[in-house]
Length: 391
Ligand code: ATP
Image (cartoon, rainbow, N blue to C red):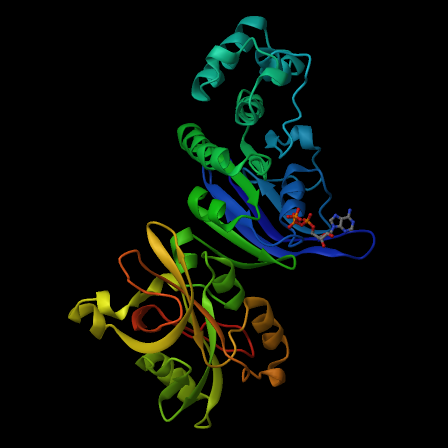
């Protein structure tokens, strides 16, 4: 068993920076967990504490049930893969991969068979006698992974291993990493700032911000049920649209018209008194559709509005259509500030954009007024004073 448990783990650097705060996380044996968040959110520091490359300021780290806070990195039986491949240029692929095994003083025969086995898994067999200079970026990264897997460690820790690769190769390598992890079944913690990578790779995703965990869950759960504004804005591309909404008399007034709210949300809102309240309505671009393209049954699940079309971007499979609606389209960052200072909620302002993703068949044209539908079953409502999702 090689589960990894972080119990109220914090990191304060000597200059006083609180890089990680009270992180609680239980990673099951064999699980593939992704740490994701914007630059500086503390994901690398968290990974480095698991690896033993950074001291833990407070809290406890357990690997396979044992407290390892004070155990040296080499005694944790963990392999790291970094963004830079750090291969030895003078050694062949075979020698690079064999290196950790030679350090561990295994006999030549065992080393050879372990290297060849890893090479097979990573499809590196034909390249075993090449030097790193004669490999592509993706092949080098596979060698770096090979060097990690030959040791058969308790866990893999990966810090942005694909970020040096070009976009196409990154997508290919994603499937290599994913397949490898499934095949080996080794507990893996993987750091990235790329939400697409996070969504496509892991069993569970940990979203961090400002050193704290915002939400932990399977990718689909984070997408469907973001706990707060930050997670809602971070997951999904293009980002969720956020619009101001005023509650009163059981209705929700928005720039898209009056939006009906479900019973559960209504009860929650009524619990806070009868006075109208400011809320934030969140709708993902993919939950809009050209109103001319939907059938009657679908139509009943949502509502329609008409808005001027500013820009149409044809993506082949679908169209990104930017609409102008009244009221300001607040960004997630602005909304976060609002959440920090509830009194400052002021959404009135000049017209601006709503990003929608419509079917490729939509005949929408720039400059026209278009009727657009959105799915009421998919909307989110946030309390701007806390950022919490009320839906
Ligand atoms: P990135 O994606 O940019 O690598 P990250 O999420 O991995 O970011 P960390 O590298 O973990 O973030 O850093 C978290 C915070 O700790 C940042 O504010 C960073 O400036 C700070 N930090 C990192 N290392 C040190 C250090 N040695 N001393 C002081 N502060 C540090």
